[in-house]
Image 1: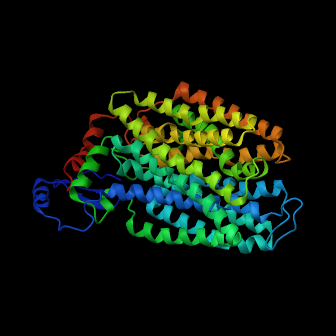
Image 2: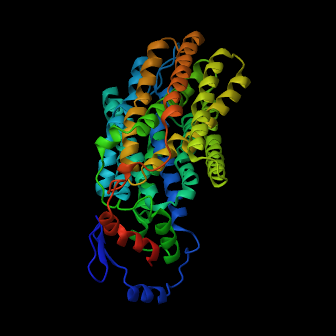
Image 3: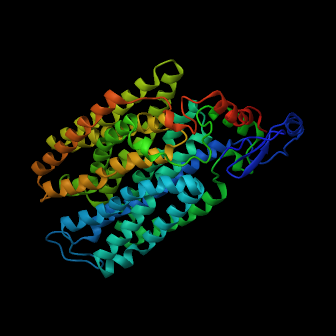
Length: 496
């Protein structure tokens, strides 16, 4: 909330009182901060690493079961081992999909909670809840698969809060010229997936599946401790940020977030925004593709391509390790193109097409090929290209609403993450025999159609500038409105 200043130009932003009169600014400029050990590391770089590692840990905890379930289930024509269960393919699909039912439900809650409590609290507590559930999964599975479904649902709801939370902090911390590159931090989840499969495959091969969940849950708890010490909602909240970095950030983001502190989500404006709908629809197709690879990759590698559990883990995870590198490259290229006067909107459309049209074609080709090497090459390329979406439609969310990125992401993810459970339901209805390549061909062909068709609305209706509802004041504000917001902009130009 921004209050009209008194004569000495004092005003309040979210409970923090600040003065920008000339005397105090001069005094602040004369103050020399004592040198600190890690001052040479920018705080926004620390935020990048926290975002990267946070999504890495989050996806380790959510995807460990995708490969562990291969060992949890009694294999056809094989004797049952200890801690193995006679679950049908449909039951396995329910267990895997339960996470995403509640993940979708949590999106709006995540947007509201982040606007009220801030990224630090929402992201931190949601990660902790996910970690505790991971530690409890072996016990729940032994009791009844229904308890496992319940734990996965809790994990899904908690994890659903993380994306709106992290998106909300970007507008305040990251200058526009760095945002595409910062978006590559979200691809920490690719490293998470890439590490999960070989790590879990190795643990299962040498011990069994329960230690998988004890390991990932412990990693999650440890990460939460680091997050709580290093994460802050805004530069002004950070006790260790240098004056130079804080000034640079606040000057760079001043226009995009003017009057945005303390804003409530404008749900009606978001729900009636054509650019927001175009993002939500196109990313639905990308998510459908992505989760076909994530959730059914280990099953396809095992039942169709015939790889053993350790090889399965390596080959299922390796494409996601590569996809982080591709994300960094895509996002750097996007920033370079914008810096060299290529239209931001054109850049977003190109990278969105790379993220879902090309992989959509490749997944259909995978179903046609019976050559393991050819399939693996196409698999690597498709998974790597999917990450271009973070230089495309996903970054576009911050373009159109830097003040309300959390709520807009919540809206978009409520729609597009529904693909994360619709896709496995559709696949399980089509694939009744997981060794039948003709059935996989139909399932992969459906993914191709969805990914291409959903790109068309984005191609036609996407925009790349902040929308009028991004600001507290209307785009048709009066001169008095300009005067009322002037102290905030003055602060961002002179804050020390």
